[in-house]
Image (tube, rainbow, N blue to C red; front, side):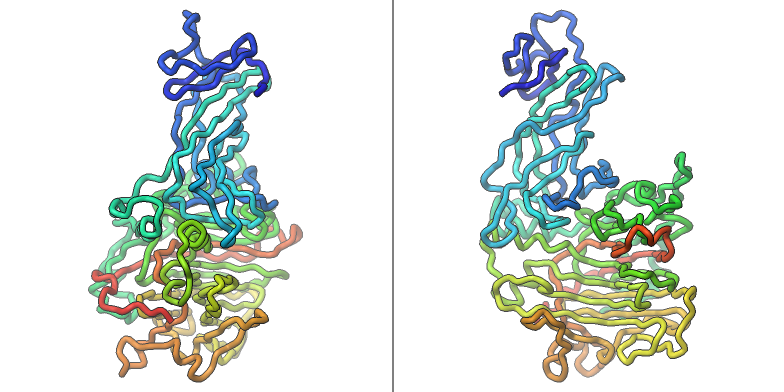
Length: 554
């Protein structure tokens, strides 16, 4: 192994580090000595301040896809799902400009990620020039999030160098598992039960709500009495942003609680006028899109993303969100959404590492994530939908037909399936304020809407406004009718049609919350035109967590 000569020899305490000696030979430093024993005036110019870097419970995995670029503007240590650590150094001089590299690492044979049943790859540790550590797999599958609960301890040799002085320092650090989750100790390691326990833990911060009794009075008619429900999570987006930076931008996302949300500096991703694509301001979260916003900063299509991945995961309860948007349509497709979803990578661990089979709907709904779309608004078409998807676009080799629901609002036209009726149409600058709620129970879903000017209170979406669809072998959507459709509905009280339960793709795994915008907008679609303001996101759960309801595995 040959390395460039160094002008200064450096060692840090703890584990032995590999050093380049003045004569060009290599030696391991004595861990009990702070420097060469022959030096009476040793003063390290650079040393590694930390030697252990735990990966997160749930994190971002970069791939070899061209759009997975660690040099993108969101590459900051605060963007927790992307970069799990920032290498810390102690420098004796302010004149050094260090860059970092991974020189080598062990690859434990027990830790692999499987893209298919037979195609598996090792996950490797990489580092940006600036010292941000991230995980990588040699695939071209873009934008993966995955569970990292049993990531093994891995020695990784890093280097820090300064081109101006020819200084280069080597150090072995440890990349370690996430902080242990309580309650899973009895399962041991490296088996499906241990994996499932770690993944299924529910992380719900307490005390994030406001006046609970006042808010409870506004709840719709849920499965249980309103008095049984507690507000377990609430984001009102009412923080005061800090002072403006040199460009006049105020980073309102920094007001969010980092124990609940994964976010970045709002001022890093702006349109041509310097307006952030996503920000907290004036008591709301503002999500927007433009050609500049969707130029690849958060991925090919993404313009803004805010999520609780690895921070807040919940199973069953009532989620409510209130939002306002203007109707100016884009000359291209884009999508404003709130989704509960984990991006679908967990099954690869269960099938590839533990041999868990998916043979029926119970296997699927218990062991994979189901996408719950609370809303998806498409400005170009002035319409909005709410969905649940199971097995959509995937093939587990089990013969399970993909199934989905659809509940729509057409804001500027009259449609028989639309939740509201607006035969008079609307103007190009009209705005709408919507409150959307979805109660997710083991026995099915209940969706509620309130559209100011059309509905005076939260109203349960009735059965005749809900489409049930599957994908045929050709990949086309097929709308179910008659008995095929009816089998996907039930009732809390069989004698009361107002207690409807929609039983399409009932998820039985805790899911995070994700707010975002994506679009296929070219550079000419700039600056921002269409914005959506999110007033709040609240999540309620009953005291018994629906323990009296039987799970549905349709």
